Length: 75
Image (cartoon, one colour):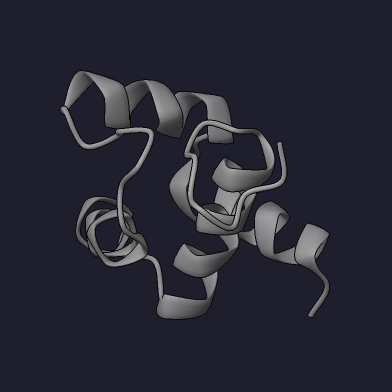
């Protein structure tokens, strides 16, 4: 499955865009610049019932958008 297909499936399953998910993560105090993947993916699994692969796709998307900064992020 392509990365784009993961994102499309996530939007269909949750009814949320990545921006809406980001806003909800901020509202709930989940999102922080230096957060760990496990905290984020556990939240996605709990909040949106995403599987691990889809949660990791969102992790990558958030990093690519620089909504999360890790030591491995490209700035």
